[in-house]
Image (cartoon, rainbow, N blue to C red; front, side, top):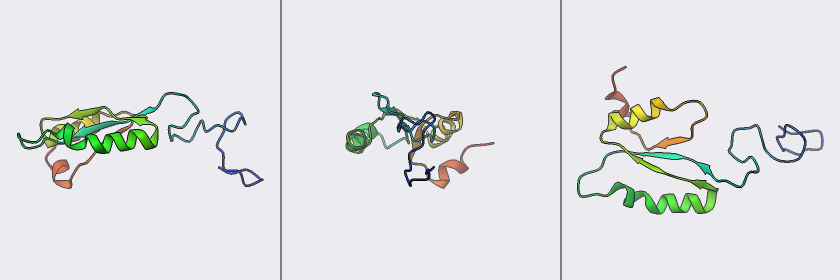
Length: 104
């Protein structure tokens, strides 16, 4: 939220650091951890190797660490997403077909 002078900092105590908007930039020295759920791949494809250049790019440019979490099935991917609690930082490349596989 901005203040009267047009400054858009979001602070709790007025020190100019972002502490309450949930973007992970709280002024700390530790990078934000974002778990990346990996869909299964064909046997001859190493899915972690395939995604590694993307993870490296994001880690270098966004102050995050990305621990990959492979799953054995598309429904396993969706189940991992459903297990996430509020505040967890989890990402998965999921198609609508994968979501349809998981019973409610």
